[in-house]
Image 1 (tube, one colour):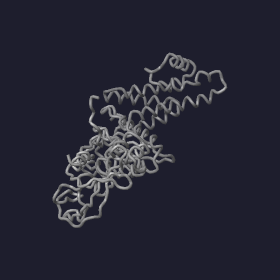
Image 2: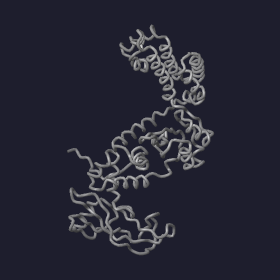
Image 3: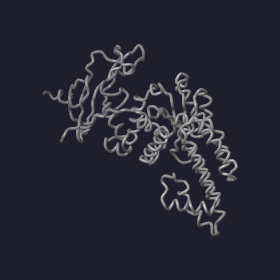
Image 4: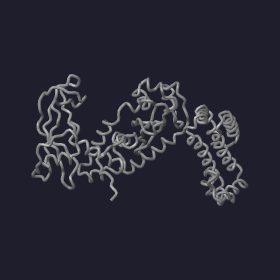
Length: 411
């Protein structure tokens, strides 16, 4: 077997002819290659085009052979494409505008999905900033407008990525379980940019939108998707009652401080907020003491649990009746935090009842937000929203990579 044939097989790139193999003074293995195509193709549309001129010799970094750095050398031609104009020719081993082969970039992006950027730079022997550039290129190459096709049910939420109120708005496809869009900001104008990007045809196909009770998101959805039904996330609805209960408890702790009844209310937070099925014997004893010694706090606890029970109904009419009864009770409860919560729930009642009909929550969105927090924590934070969004797309937008990994064997 000739040396050129051996290295052509080792490269793992089809459509390549190896012309020469040599070591340079810097101990880097250089493989001089050329495409096997007789007529060059445009680097933009990949159509055959007449030659224009030839660029100087340049290099593409390829996968290393052990500790030996491998580079592919070729003097690319430029073509005069009728559609794209004068462009660099397409080469089968990489992007004409990149300094790395496709196999190398795929491996770097694959490692960036599972570990931090510093470790990727160390494993591949490239600069830290270069890892981010490769991730940007892979995302632009793999993430196209086709991800918006067929959007029917979406979830919208914000994600805090830095101090001083730096947020991202994230849009998730409920059916595909992946992020389809993200941008810096969390106001109505930010969300309008998404609807403007996808266009009226995609907007017309969106039927359901799950959000928390953010007024900004609700306003943008009402303006751009007047036909879509808004579903308010159940967790945020129940959180209103839980926060109201905790506010009642804290006010009673301050009021009873120094009296004999203070011990009954003190340290009852988790017993009051827990799901009844998760209560321990000690928690039940605390609740029993609250029931006997502090009726306002126990009334607040019952209000919190009754709201959860109303949201458990599967029939919309029964849920509507239960919610109306709860609203009347909360409004007359003489507990100001619950009066305020009842006012908020009454204003958002249609979207809460939509949850009863569709049983759709922002659970997928919150789960992806947890993954984003892990990515943000793994990187010890991001200086820019653009870098975080690129990593977000790489890990949560359904991008499937094909790194050149060894084939598993039995030994």
